[in-house]
Length: 327
Image (tube, rainbow, N blue to C red; front, side, top):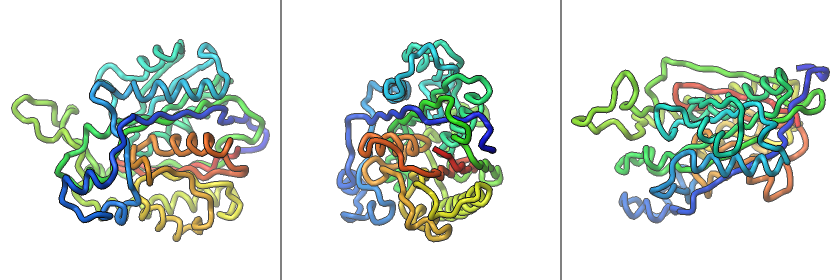
């Protein structure tokens, strides 16, 4: 990206967390785990679960509304809504048109199923649309994973949570927006994280209810893949963007597991870079963790740090990516 390219700025942020907060002690007691076991292995101390009457759209709408309100953007100005989610209200129809309707938007609206890397992909696609059309784009990432957790599976039970985050993108000054981007995938690891039943390969079946929960058969392998992929993509986009870790304003990684992020930081020189995140108190809400962290930081600090921001994620598929965003 050159300084003459049309700029894209993050004009507004929003987030939503369900009311119910589930602390580690509750899960450790139910699963007969020693006190402190979850925090030691994940860095997570609590997470939020949606109420029984809430669907994914009920999380996405208030997050989107907050971003619009913060940006001072009238709904009729928005040119596109991108909803990054792995847990839509229904397999069909997509949830984005419903969210757009409830927000008073009259624009295009589409779901983007990119797992934990969904927000990074939606952000880049949204920035492209802003540059092409000159219209604001609302990017929402939301997941309701508490209903996709196998209560007996410790590898997923301790990590996943429900949340939504949103960013309103608008035309900005030349040079603002994605400065360098790297998006990648490796379908050889397609089954590393999965919800087996419900698609065309293994449809729902009344006589076969198993396979509806999230599965991660080899957590160690996923851990290693995530560290390697995130470290590689971080190094690549910093090199493409011509910046060193010391020159970054902040690092906004997907909040999967604190040990993963610590290892990535060690391998890339990011240990001293300000890390945006709310993993400790909000757990892993897949694609929602990055915009949730941004919105939370803006609410606490009044804005994002000055300087380039490294945004990155790794998720099921396997898909991953990183972008160096110039504020």
